[in-house]
Length: 343
Image (cartoon, rainbow, N blue to C red; front, side, top):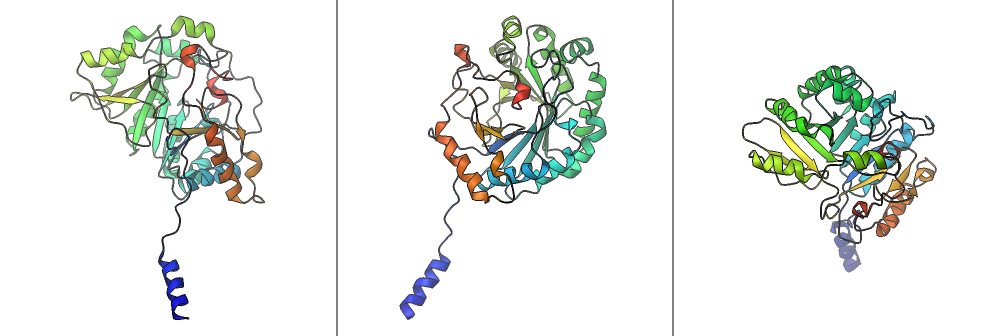
């Protein structure tokens, strides 16, 4: 009896088995979820939705489904959630979505990517709801070029919202700009001037081919090396990446409060450090932005389904993740528009 009691005591003291984690067949660990909350966007960006959004404006994940989804990924080790679209702020319940993600045990960072059209009016509410990191898409600081690229003459309002956000104590405020041939001659100098006294990061993203933007890509694509060379020649130096960072390599300069970032999907080894998974606004797990199909998770996002089933389906999908995309071969998977999967 005494021996049995000692065995029970030892068992009680033994550490609980570690929960399963998201690791693929190439040893990459996934701590970062990009979750689209809508496909709808009210901008008409030339490289994504030049004719505006024309799809169905309903059927997206509901708030309770989003909460269950985030809990499932957090149980598997995800610590950072980025809400994207489309344009997330077209959803009236965005504050509640942010709050649900921020309240999830294990989630340490909740980020948002927005075109900024409601930024100055809503950013304080997002911060109060638990938003910790903010990205705003601004492809040019020239008002005419911005209006031409987006279909909206809203640059001044959006920049005012960015300045408001910089005063709210976010972990990071970043601007996303697509690297384009039309704007490359002036964009770097303009953004550098803007960054001199602002503790933000401007990230230039190499234009990526999709099934719908072939002619635009051919006319506008500029390799990221152009910016990398510009930065090195002016004394900017690369910073080390953290485990839950996105794909950007950031550059700092002692004379500037802000930083530049470079996202180079056509560069060698770009996918080697992949740490993020994507779920579409309709509940499909995308293992790669430029993959095909997806794994439907929505049927498991109800009260009647044990959360372990959701977690297991996610784990079962990981072995099918490929080592990298095939953009260099001109293959975009089945991706028609970035707004379809949240970019």
